[in-house]
Length: 218
Image (cartoon, rainbow, N blue to C red):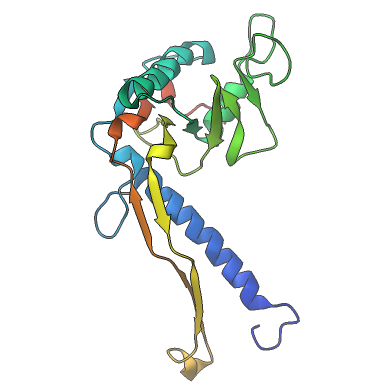
């Protein structure tokens, strides 16, 4: 493949490695343990604002109170408002399915004046719209197996400017010597990384509880 493929096959491999690297860094930033070489992730920082939302039949309007409480705790803790809210894609699309009493989407985007947010249904990862006046971000690395029933996800409302991630320029190399006896090669992509999430724990609010049981059908 490397020597005879008409395509630049090494570029394809390194593109896949870069995507995998990005996913692994994101995973550790969210839920890394801080041990055994892992970064300490946001969900494992001590002293953050923990907002419990208990609800057997959750709805978007009922979620609004803990969402605003989360934003208030950040503002009161670091004297600056949160700058984003992160959630699973399933939570976002569930929120987009919620209707008002006239069967209009509560996250109707550029429609009714009572819309709770704006939606970008074409996005499933990264920036996806707005909710409660905050930029909304979908992240598939937010776990959905937490809580007593191991079936809850989490919503993170934070002043992300107060969280610091450093990354060196990615390095790539192809190692032939180790596997040369069988005409194999090893591709490597690596980088040096540091993350400080616990400098100001009160810059982070995490919504938890039975109201965040992973929505059925999403």
